[in-house]
Length: 264
Image (cartoon, rainbow, N blue to C red; front, side, top):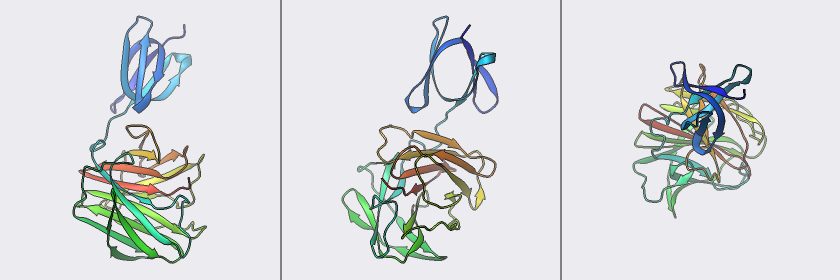
């Protein structure tokens, strides 16, 4: 007997979804195809949480699209492929609007404000029109870590940590945004390692937040990774691709992104 009963957790405990399943195929965008020995077929949007094959049980966790998951978001991308800027090099960033790191040129950016935070000092910077994006030109910044963030109408936020020079591993303070994604310990992120982030709402950890994560060049229409924060507002992603990663969270009508700079 190779079949198993499939259960799903929709947030209020496990419930039986299908009996005597002998075929289960995970697909794209969190779609799971199931077929039972009776010929019943079903597709659900979920991910496999646990497989208890000795007890003939498979437990799924329902994937719900977060509020605004298919809405628009803004994000920052560095104009470099090296994961950092060299000291003395002009620091140039692109501000884009769309979804899943795919810019939508049909939508505009309105009431945008951009800021740079370095060693506790914050200053507002200008944005410049450039093809399909707006650019932030910071000029020649001193060696170290700086944080850049942008907000549009106090509903969409984007943040990026820029490394100038090499080997800067000291921690950075949160910016105090209404909704903010913060790396637990800033360091060079490498493919094949876990990367931990924390979500803060008005400076406090946000438990149970749904985090979307994607990477440069993804072919998926939707975000390929969906994570949930723990009691400390933290979660981890195992990095499997080269290039920049984007993390996005939506809560109470606000969407906030964080771009992780990585080399290609």
